[in-house]
Length: 412
Image 1 (tube, rainbow, N blue to C red):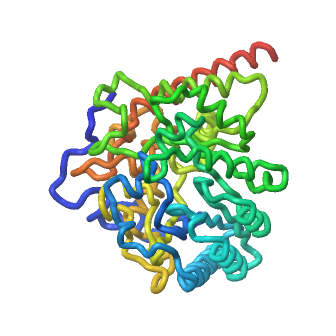
Image 2: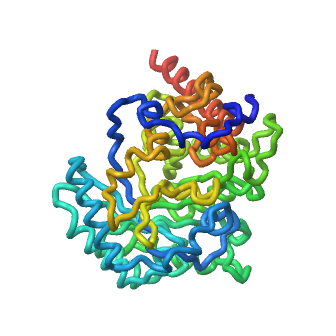
Image 3: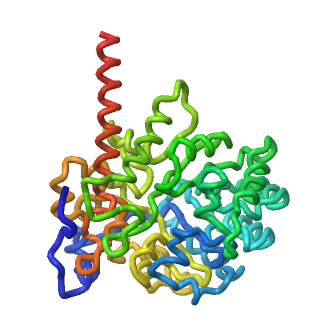
């Protein structure tokens, strides 16, 4: 595998900052891809204390400066900005994701107000797809009725069965949260509300058995499962991602889960990471920015109305996600030439030399952008998970090729 740094350490601003827009983008008149996903931090606090949380336990502590809750005025201004962006770029649909912190702490009144405000502000020519990512602790029948009436799709974060989940996702007093999450999920997956069940999100925990985790998630009959790698980078390595690149603990975990999922006699659910890798191996394009080279089209609005880049950048350093823009004075188009946005939209041009020379660079895309950070060279590095991504993609590729070869033999 490759050595740690893709570039010699620089004395100037870290990449992509301090570079002229034309040089960064390769275009004299850069317009960029319009934003199609708007993440709204409707509540900046949380009722859990997840061990891996990038908002509260990693480099950026900006949440301390944020208002606890987004105001109705900020909601109205943001809705108008989204409507204008959709209109000017003739977007057929926009996705509005309620996030936090924990969005349910904002309460049913504010969330209902937000849903109504966005549907009223955005032109009927543009579909508004509302979603929410929650820990489900406060997911009661009244909140689910609101989600059902407004068409809010609900994703739940849960890290497997009780033991695995409670180890990573306790309350702030250390008590496990699984019992409350189980109750919320039981309500969500009941017949009345199942139509708003979007799926489950699970952060990989090397201490947990991958098959047990997958099967505990599968018991809820989710339409989709997202396995996420814990946020980390070259300065702050994720748990278990040691310097020895012959070791691939995250690939080992994910390959075990992949084999259980892929070898099942019938399709049980979609696992987005695996499905996206398969699509890319077959020549398609990814639908998520954590894998592949598809231009990122997500922007974040904080509770105070600040416009920020993808919030996972908070795991890199304090202020890494900031743009200096605000919905009170700036349209979303003003964020398109921001170096951090451009860097996540220029595809292979954002990769360092080592990544560009790798046979799998169009599949892994260099890895998730926040995971590439290293002081000195910024984000023009391969992912800290490079060895794991290489091993996982290679394994899936072998399995797919073997099945395709077998199909060709059988069909003549």
